[in-house]
Length: 144
Image (cartoon, rainbow, N blue to C red; front, side, top):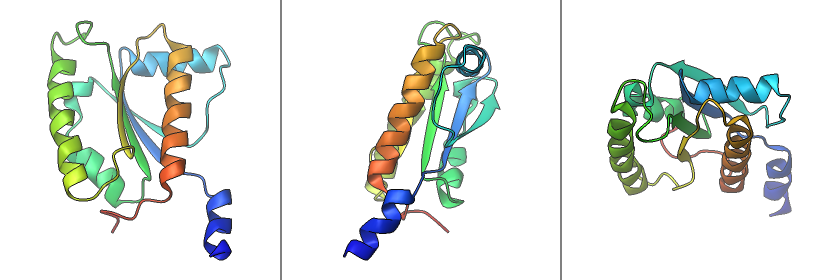
């Protein structure tokens, strides 16, 4: 049993982050410019709006080896495309239910709202996501 625990200690999760161009990506940029540290486990995919993230992108990320997914956009009511983040919020509520139904752990896919002025918050969100996914261990469901 200790042989299974030992590799887990050195394991680092791979996390794909779909970030809204206008807010969350700018928040990540601010974190970088301000030299705010956050784990290097995240790979950022810049999208025009969180409402443009197709749920299949999230499922495909999990299928192709991502241990976790983060989708982040503008705060509700502050979307540069009027209501894109409202669509995203509704779509992801349904997706989370579907993923739980097929056996994907609840902490594996995460959603957050980060504005362009919240570099510190972006850093904290990434730390929280990495901790949560690391506690879950490597992804086993949906992986090809």
